[in-house]
Length: 299
Image (cartoon, rainbow, N blue to C red; front, side, top):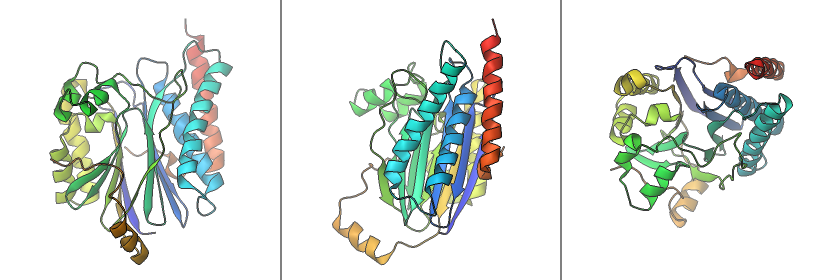
């Protein structure tokens, strides 16, 4: 597989960076994950890190070197992440479980598969267009889908931060079937927290990505999101992959005979767990448990 990956995560104007992100690969499969710990609940960053650690562990176990079923892997990994968060909260007797949004993408055989919960997003950018985007699990997204408000009104809507789905919440999340799309050379797959997409317009996103080398573009997007958010800036995290392979002959032939990609056209500081070992994951989980125990002892 030929691709390049760039990431950026900034604390913004918050006291703690509750975002977590990472990527892992084998010779035949790639996994990208972004999680955004939720404020208003205890230790959102713990939920985000538990989720990312579980995805990493599951990928290391199942991708040998490829996943038997990428869509099924995503469903299991989301369910396992939710269970890990809830179980840890129960073990420590917390009155409320830590919670996080998440978006994850698997790339295998020249195809991207993705799923999400909450308002962390994935964008697929091709040829100057946003070919596909995840649909936020929010009441405001429902208003957009019903035609009651315009997409441009989402960032300023008073209910924008209300979520209908997340990891760690009650009732358990209901994950939608994974979306997939065949990748073409120079496609960009971008995963991000709402701290990035919220302050930016689709045009700003596209203009920056298409006019600049990917590493520079990601940095400029993060800086633009920070400057537009001002003193209320949320954590800003983005993980972007540029695909470097041509479509295979059989993929091109199949694409010509099939309906378009199932998603619609929407145009009009690096963490240490990118390449963690299993032992490092276990140490991270132990540290998370210690942090949760400290929280549970607070009056």
